[in-house]
Structure formats: structure tokens, C-alpha cells
Length: 406
Ligand SMILES: Cc1cc2nc3c(=O)[nH]c(=O)nc-3n(C[C@H](O)[C@H](O)[C@H](O)COP(=O)(O)OP(=O)(O)OC[C@H]3O[C@@H](n4cnc5c(N)ncnc54)[C@H](O)[C@@H]3O)c2cc1C
Image: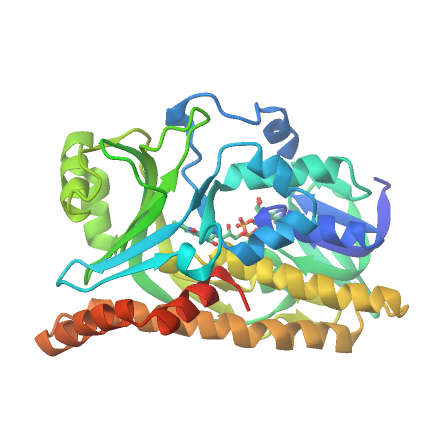
């Protein structure tokens, strides 16, 4: 890349969301630059398939059918599907404090799967393999350290001293987006005072291609099914959300004590559990930018919104942003409109803000409902779950929403 390069569109942040956006924009014919702070070449050179079963990426995502369609259209799905991934046909949700239980079935929706569990690393690897073959100018291993605007000109500064210019700059630099802060887009946010503990476990019983989720007042525990290259169905990635103090206590336990608590928290639904990876704890915070756009600037993915992982929707919302921005910029390109056109960006914001807010509100409602342990609320919750479980059409409508189907 030149000393001062000019682009139609610059994407900052090559996570799952930014790299998908950059790839899609280059396929539309825009001149695109992508800047990623970490070294992606190393990731590409790493064996695509990690060999050991104890080497699953601790960060996995339940990718919805709608997100899968986007990855198919970008041409990266065959690469992802050629590696380790686990489609799940059932989702079982139950109340640890009662008898309420709901089971969602792909067959009832006439779908092959409700979603697919994929290691985040695999998705990013597939996207970067495709980016390497694309026209995108890739700058990795270099952080963005500043932003500038001069009349109708704008761009970013890199830590190695380079300055890049573009008509449109898109921030996909994650939850703590520096670009969002530099540009001055405020957020509404609150701390859940919770942490999500994440690790990989081996279970004596097969996961039966089911995503398991048990709710308790302190937070949900999810067992997400993984599949090894050899087709072994006994591995799961767990996401255990707990109040911060309790999460710290759990993190401090030795492996055996942690395993015992985990096994009892999932009610031995999958038999005995063995922890086969390190444990990681992620602090949980809800965050939503009041505006996703400012002159020649747009937010996507976690830079625009972060959400409690209880329904595994964060990356899916990010892919929804990518889909909407790709649609609007494709129309702009066909009509010869600049990518920083105000109306184009306003349409993107209008399409995404309502949908993201609705999902965030639903997750918050869910979390509050399960946090209450008064007898009447518990009774209503459990009766409601049993009742909903028998109401096929309503239940299937909820599942279709979560899958991102119209
Ligand atoms: C415990 C947990 C479980 C989750 N489970 C699910 C799930 O099942 N399904 C789901 O859909 N979502 C899930 N999520 C949410 C999902 O992981 C995120 O929504 C998603 O990773 C966001 O992707 P992103 O590309 O927007 O941001 P990120 O993944 O944070 O990527 C941002 C990128 O920007 C780069 N960057 C940052 N600053 C700079 C800079 N200054 N210069 C250059 N580069 C920079 C970073 O290196 C990074 O690569 C989960 C989240 C958590 C915490």
C-alpha cells in the first residue's frame, strides 16, 4: 500500500464482521482497504484444522441460518463447512428452578438445522483466505491510532505513521471501538455485573446435536455442541454467565471442583463432564450506540452494539448489519452514488437500529424474567414455558426469528 492511499471504503477491524463486510464490498467493485491490528498472516499459516480435540477455540458462535446464507453468498461457506463445525437440530431450554422446558426442533420448521456452532477462529480464517484472493488492500498487524477529517476528506492514522483516506470509514473494531469514541458517537450502556465463563468440555453422553441451555436466577449455562474431525459427539463449548463475584469464585476453583459444580449445574443432562481446556472469563456489558452513522462514517457489529450472550445473537446481529450495509452500498454503486452519501447511510441505520434494539430488549426481558425468584414469577415462568412448548406455531415463530428467517 502507498504512503497515502485513497479508498472508496476503509473498514477498520478484521474480526468476523469487518472481514465479511470488506469481502462483500470488494465483490461489488468498490476499492476497499481493511485494517486489522493483529497478525492475520500467522492465523492463515496456522493449520486450518487444528489437530487436537483439546485445541478448540474457546470463542465459538451459534451461527444462524440467515448468517450462514450471507457467508454462502460471500463464497466462504464451503471452506467453513469443510472444517470442524457442528449443525444442531434441537435446542432445549429449561428452568433450573422449576419444571418448565421448551424444545425447539429444526424438523418442525422443515429446516436441516436450527444453526451451526463454529469456532470464531475458523470463520475468520475462511474470510481471510478469501480476502487474500480478493482486491481488498489488507493491512494487518498494525493498529489504527487516530482519525482525521478535513472538510469532505476523512481517514485514519496508523501506528506506523501512515495515513489512509477514504470516502467512507466503517468501524468494525469491536465492543471497545476506539473509532466510535474518536468520532464522538455516544452509547447507552450498562454493566450486567456478570461474567461469562467459557471453556471446552468432554461429556460421557453424546450431545445429540442439541444446544442445551439451563436458566437459573444467577444466569444461563449453555452447552453448545462441537464435532471433531473424527465425528466425535462428546465435546461441547460452555458459556456460563454468572454474577461477577460468583464467576470469580468459579474461576478460582481447581479443575476438579469446577467440574463438579458444572456437572451439577447442568443437572448431569449429558452425563459426567471433563474440562479439557483453560477457562476464560468475559465481563458482560450491554452497549448500544445512539447513532450508527456520522458524516462519512458508520458502525457495524460489536462497535455498534454488544448484547448478553444468553441467546448467542451478537455475531448474528453483526452479520445483519453487514447484510444491510452491503444492500444499501450495492444500490448506491449501481446508481453511481458515493458510499458516504447521507441518504444511503441513513437507510442503513434505519434498517438496523430498530431490529438490533428489539433483540436487545428481548434478551434483557428474558434475563430479568429468569433473575426473579418470587414464587408467583417462577410459577408463571414455568407454566408459560410448558404452555409455549405445546403451542407449535407460536414456538416455531420464535425459533424462526432466532434463526433469522423471515
Ligand atoms: C462469551 C461470549 C459468547 C458469545 N457467543 C455468541 C454466539 O453463540 N453467537 C453469536 O452470534 N455471538 C456470540 N457472541 C458475540 C460475538 O462473539 C461478537 O458479537 C462478535 O465476535 C463481534 O464481532 P466483531 O467483528 O464485531 O468484533 P470483534 O470480534 O471484537 O473484532 C474486532 C476486530 O477489530 C480489531 N481492532 C480493534 N481495535 C483496532 C485498532 N485500533 N486498529 C486495528 N484493528 C483493531 C481487533 O483486533 C478485532 O480483530 C458471544 C460473545 C461472548 C463474550
